[in-house]
Image (cartoon, rainbow, N blue to C red):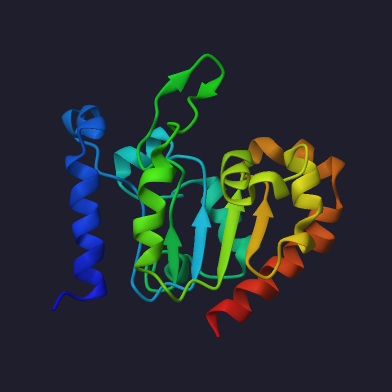
Length: 197
C-alpha cells in the first residue's frame, strides 16, 4: 500500500518526465513546488523567478521575506511542506519577456494542481497571489481586476484569500491602497493561524 508521500512522489516523477517539460530538464531545472500529505495551507503564486529556479528554493528573495511577514509565520514554518504547500501556476521559470518574466504556461495548473491537491486533503486555506492564480481558482467570482478582487477578500473566505504579489515593486500599489495593510493582512494572519491550529 502506497503512502501519501509515495503518491506525491509519483506525481512529481510524472511532472519531470512529461514531454512538455523536456526543455526544463535539458536546462537542469527541476519542478519548483512543495507538497506534503498533511499540508494545511496552499500558497498559489505565478511561476518561479530565475533566482528561485536556479537555487531550487521557492520565494528565496525579498518578496519571500515580505510574504513570511504577511502570513505571520517563520521561514522554517513556510518551508515545511507538512504545513505549507507551495504550488505556483507553473513549476518552472518561464523565461524573460519584453517587460519582465513571461507568464506561466497556459494549461499547466489545469493539468498538475488537481492531482497534487487531491493528495493533500487537509488544506484548509488557499492563498491566491496575483491575477493568474485568482482567475484560475475564483473563475467568474474574481472581480474586474486584481485590486478589486483583493479588496473583496471577505467574499472568498474561509476557503480562499487573494493577495497582491509581495514584490518590492508593488510599494506604490500598497501606498495607494492602505486598506491592504490595515484590513487584509490582519485577516490573512488570523486565517493562517486558524488553518494551522
